[in-house]
Image 1 (cartoon, rainbow, N blue to C red):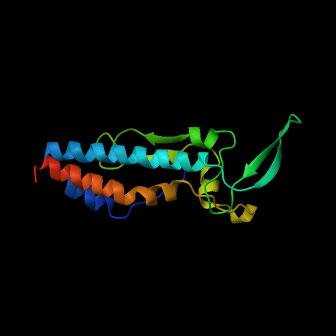
Image 2 (cartoon, rainbow, N blue to C red):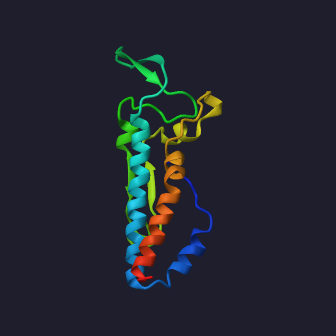
Image 3 (cartoon, rainbow, N blue to C red):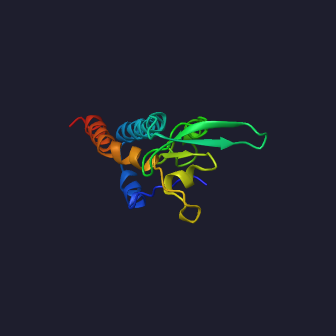
Length: 155
C-alpha cells in the first residue's frame, strides 16, 4: 500500500474549476503536472541524500550480507538498493492528471508506507520522504498555478 496524503476540499475545488475556460484549464493542468514532477523529484533527491552515520549489516537468505548506512529517525530514508526511489511514480489515468485537477504521486515499493509513517508495533520510526517533498513545494506549486491561470486569463 502506498503512502497517501489527502488534500481536504479538493472535490469542492474541482467543482469550481469545472467552470474554467479551456485555456485556463489547460494552463492549470500543466502546472499541476509540473508540480507533481517537482514533488516526485524532491522526494527522490531527499532519498539520494545519504544521512545518518549508523551502519547496520543486513543479511539475506542466501547467506550474503552487506553493510548499509541507516538514516536518522524522522529524516528521509537512505537510498539502499534504489528500489524505493525507482518506484516513486506519478500515476496517470482517468481523473488523475489527464482529466481532473489532481495528481497522484506515490511509491509502489512494498515498504513505502512503513517508511513514510513508521510502524510502532515493529519499532520502526517514520522516515518521511513524500510529505516533506509536498510541504516543501506546496507554496511554489500554488503560486505557479495562480500565475498560469492569470496569464491564461490575460490579467
